[in-house]
Image 1: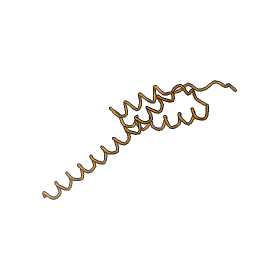
Image 2: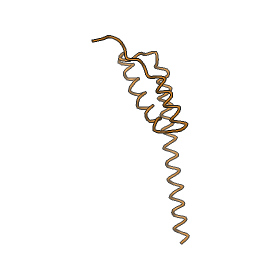
Image 3: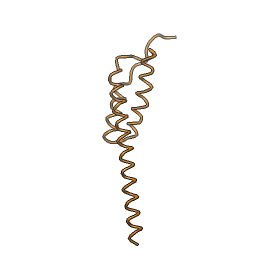
Image 4: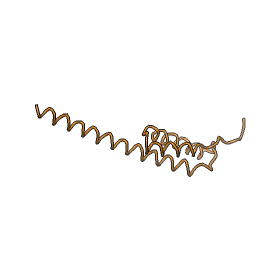
Length: 91
């Protein structure tokens, strides 16, 4: 068995978080989940710890992207429901 640490994925997680907040919220979820897992692996000594900062930043951005997407979905659903009720009331 090798004592080599797995390389960190901090850059990937950070990029996923940024893209998740700008374009595609499922990547924000991926950044959150991957970041959580990688931080656990870093804490257990299984992964290269030099990527901790990027991994934390990507995970936090992923959490923000997910929260913003959830808020947007709720607002969209309320607007859609309001439009449906307004249309139904008009008939």
